[in-house]
Length: 200
Ligand SMILES: Nc1ncnc2c1ncn2[C@@H]1O[C@H](COP(=O)(O)OP(=O)(O)OP(=O)(O)O)[C@@H](O)[C@H]1O
Image 1 (cartoon, rainbow, N blue to C red):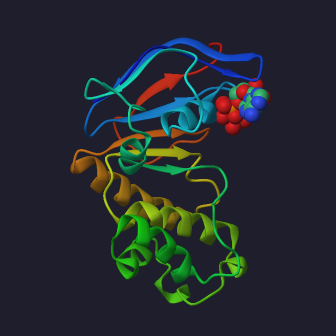
Image 2: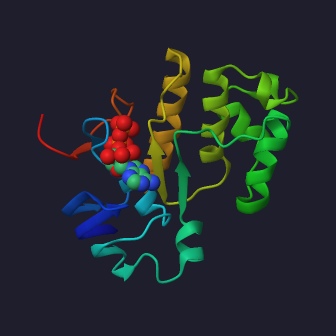
């Protein structure tokens, strides 16, 4: 279980949030909601181990998550706003980069986001939604218990959102956890909402 207790984060001099507490158990999904600037991306970056905790505690099965940053990095997949693609490499080569770190079947992952027909195309030629699908293919490569997703459905068409829903459901069915920042509904039935910033 992932547990945040009374956590606070600063960006520069600014307090982004304080006294935030929540838990995420295997199979659970949390939607991070709140206005622009409320701190959703900041919380995801914190959970990914990319920015420091100012106060409080963050634990994984009772142990501080950053005791061993490499162990924590190995248990998560973080999809930021940017798709983190290398434009000159092909679709398949982009995924190979991640498969070298995590293992997994590249063809199967591309198929999960319906990109197999475009496997040989340089990533710079993909449409915005296809780039997003290639980013999502990383999730399909090899299992990791914690998915941290920043506005993952931006640019996806209806069929791609349905496929993404299947990926999310399979992940949760094997005990995976999801935290997703979003301004729109996501295919995450039964997800709890965690509102950041002031109440609307
Ligand atoms: N590197 C940084 N240095 C200083 N302040 C930052 C930095 N990154 C973010 N902030 C500030 O932290 C606050 C939270 O930003 P964050 O990106 O987490 O919001 P968000 O809820 O994800 O917003 P959005 O819905 O617009 O994506 C904002 O006020 C932002 O200006």
